[in-house]
Length: 75
Image 1 (cartoon, rainbow, N blue to C red):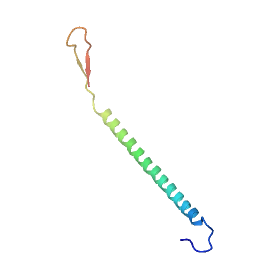
Image 2 (cartoon, rainbow, N blue to C red):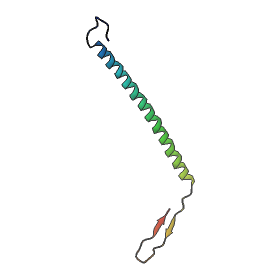
Image 3 (cartoon, rainbow, N blue to C red):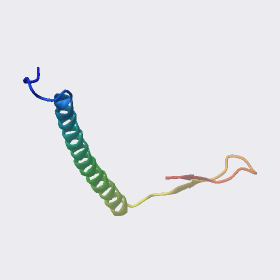
Image 4 (tube, one colour):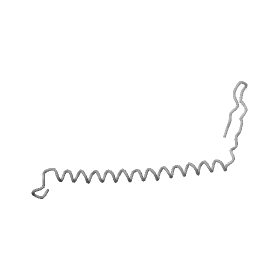
């Protein structure tokens, strides 16, 4: 209930302002979390890339099983 003598709609305006502040706070928190996840994904990608660089890659060529077929490359 609003105290007597306050104009009608004042509490609705105050509620709207509080909700808007809360929405902005949630959006800011969401952006911070998305930035953390993006940085984490980037770090994971870099780690995976560096691991692949360190490991030698072995390739095998399998001859065709019948004439006219192509060679098969196996990693």
